[in-house]
Every structure is written in structure tokens, then in C-alpha cells.
Image (cartoon, rainbow, N blue to C red; front, side, top):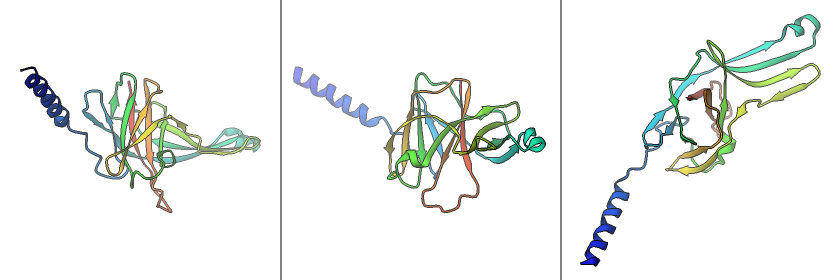
Length: 186
């Protein structure tokens, strides 16, 4: 009798574990979504960016100052907003999942303005010289997910902030247009 109960419980546990479906991969390269704590998904909003290069007034008046190039998205906030408990889990589709994700995936914080979101790419100062890759990156841990995706876990993030995700194609020689997947954290 006890053996039947134990085998019955083991059978029920096995069936319930196998019944839980794994969240599928995104369909297209560069697409991303957040896996919420209840295992539902939140698709990230994909947006095209505008590159803006501006010089400070002092550059025009004295020839001394800084010139900055920034990513700009002409809206204040992402339509994809999430309020995580203590971590963010992102699934991101890439060409494959054989490349080190740190070399092809960038997750960064935007500066929020009333009518746009900005992130500095590069700057050149008269005395400070040139600096590039100036995005305010988030650190993440990554694992393979499915056939061609990664699952990223972000432990440290700022609430009330807007973030962007860029997935680079390591095989592309020229990426003329940048698509950024965006999300906000409450």
C-alpha cells in the first residue's frame, strides 16, 4: 500500500514537471522579451534610433570644448514596462548561441528627457581626447537558451529607468541601421 502511494506521488510529480512548458525562443534575430516571475512574457518594444552629434557652444566660440554623439529615441518612455522582484530575466535571439554574448549583446541605460531618450556613444574633447563606446552598460550573466538564443540575468538595475538592448551580428560587415529593443523598470 505504501509503495503504491509513493509510486503514485512520484508519477504525479513527473507528470507535473513535464507539463510545465518552457517559454519558446523569440522568432527573429535581435528580438527579446522578459520572462516575468509568473513565467509569462513581456515583449520588448523595438525602435529605430537616430544618431545625433552636437558640439557645445564653447567649441564654436573658442574652439575648446566637447563634441558628443548620442543615440536618440524620439519618445520619453518604452511601452514595455516591468516591475521585477529582484532580478530581470531576458531572452534574446541571436544568429546562434555559440558566440560569447558579452561581445554581441549590449544592455544600457538611457538618460530620460521629456520628449526623448538619449545614450552617449562617443565624445571628443579638445583636451580630453576621444572616447567611444560610452554607453552606461548593465552587467549580466548569460546562458544558452534553446537553439539560437541566450537567457540573461540582470541582478543590479535602477528602478524608474529606461533601458535599451542592441544585438550585433558578428557576421555583418556593415550595420547601417540600428534597432534597439527597449524596456522600462518601475
